[in-house]
Length: 188
Image (cartoon, rainbow, N blue to C red; front, side, top):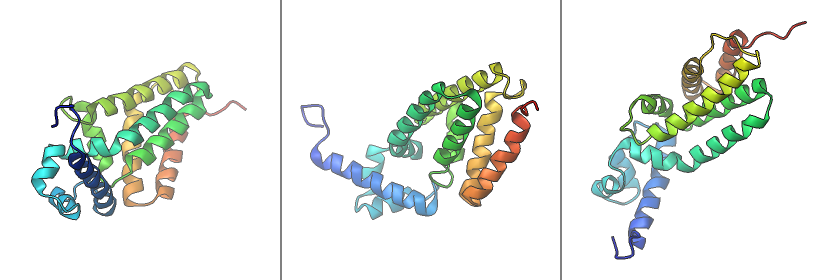
């Protein structure tokens, strides 16, 4: 690293190339795609990839950084929405987010419990927003009191998996059916 403490221009360019190729490879082949293939597509040595991203999760964390921040901003903004709308919107947003790449949902689920994971802080933040929205919905009486944030996080993972492997429509139907059992029916 140069004396300024900033990475050299070529190192920054290499990092950006690696991120662009990782995005393309993960979209094509999922998050279990070969990291060596990513480096090769970027025209760089595998050691260069590992110099920037020591683990697959570090690479995923870097790829998801901006997307995570946008998701968190959207989640925080839901505090102004009615509790049922806020919770449903959050579930829809996080399912789409977790299905960005085939296999990402599993990495996010693991990142919640693994404090050493580069994804951990983001997963904890997602879980905190989920918890807040579930608590608001429960306090408002719009969801069954037995519903937990952990339940809905598992639902999000399952629906993201459905979206990755089947279709967005099937994931949407799955969400609708499960939420019919979570939300308290309006009184007639």
